[in-house]
Length: 248
Ligand SMILES: [Zn+2]
Image 1 (cartoon, rainbow, N blue to C red):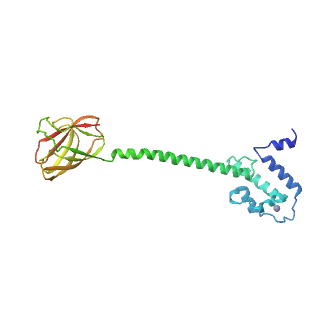
Image 2: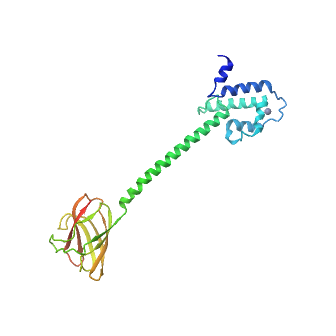
Image 3: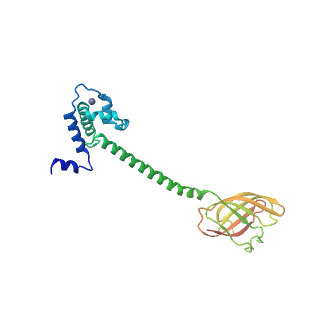
């Protein structure tokens, strides 16, 4: 394989091309007078932080016609590579600024992708969070007992079973017609003795004609699904009224 062939085959890594170019400049464009030279600090920036320069500016083409600037660049790169090796950063030693720049672009693309993935992950989990929050957000329900013909202490009732979710429930309860207004305790029990209370809340019933209704909050999250009783107890009456309840 002659030199020309290997030169042409150096497709995915243009380091060889760059080195050929450097050799060419060092040989053909001596500039001992330093005519039109780029100052040292700019060359240093070029090597260390090329993104800070607009390398598309035609003024940088000067180095292609100046052996002295090229030599300075080579020396600066050698120093940089030595430093990065010492710092164990692992910057490949034969990279020129253009490929460093490509690496910087590549790295920022990766960083962006990671950031986007992070945001997506965060948002996906935010979607779940409101659901979890909703578990403790009260569910408004209306319980109509107005037509209940419950007889105290007996299990006769004409209302269908009240169905409530296993959630925190804010219930608007329409008490049986002709119920008294005033303070009530509303509870969920497993039997009619009122001794097995699973949840309860206090409420004040307001009278509107012969209707009485109240609003009560019941936390049913700890209950297992099944059948219960909804009990209402008026403060002036120790006996409770029980209504069938299903918790789902
Ligand atoms: Zn120069």
